[in-house]
Length: 120
Image 1 (cartoon, rainbow, N blue to C red):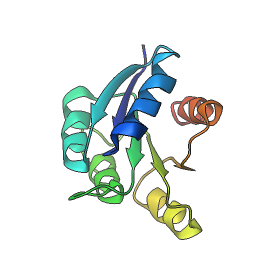
Image 2 (image 1 turned 135 degrees about the horizontal axis):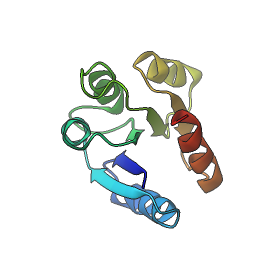
Image 3 (image 1 turned 135 degrees about the vertical axis):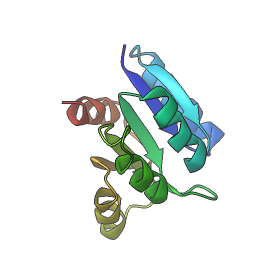
């Protein structure tokens, strides 16, 4: 079973991801901020991480950088998911180590295809 760590501070977005992923038999871990997400990535070593960008304290760019540069977590693919749709945000996210960058609202088939692609 594929384990997906979802890091998002919005309860409504988290519920959407939970619904989409659960019906496709993913094991879901949830973190509500970047710091908690980094700790969960280290503790659980998920197969893939879905990372929001706009979060309090540690934003998604900072958390992505921390995870992708961590000795035990660098191998975990990160998909950034945000309302920030500028090309500069997309480029910056990938420079921090994200494998992909998707804008919200997220299409379920696009999300599943992206998860499959980054795990190859």
